[in-house]
Length: 95
Image (tube, rainbow, N blue to C red):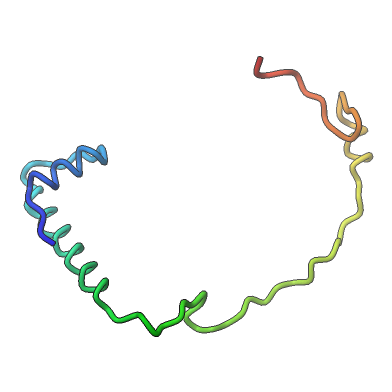
C-alpha cells in the first residue's frame, strides 16, 4: 500500500503529531513500507495453524492460592479516626 504526502500530513494532524515539512517524504516512505509489510503478512497461509499462548509451549509456574496472613482489620482500624462496620469513614469530597 502506498501513501502520499497529503495522507501522511492528514494522519499526523489526526494523531496530533507535529511533523516538519522537510521530513514528510521520509515518513511517507517509511509508513508505506510498513503497510506493504503488513499486506505481505496478511497473505501468509495460517489456515492450519492453531493459536499459541506462548511460542515455547511452556506453562506458568504458579504458587498455590492459600491465605498466608491473618485478618488484622480491627487492629489497623483502631488507629483510624472514624470507622463503621469495617469501613473507613472519610469526609465527603464530591457533592
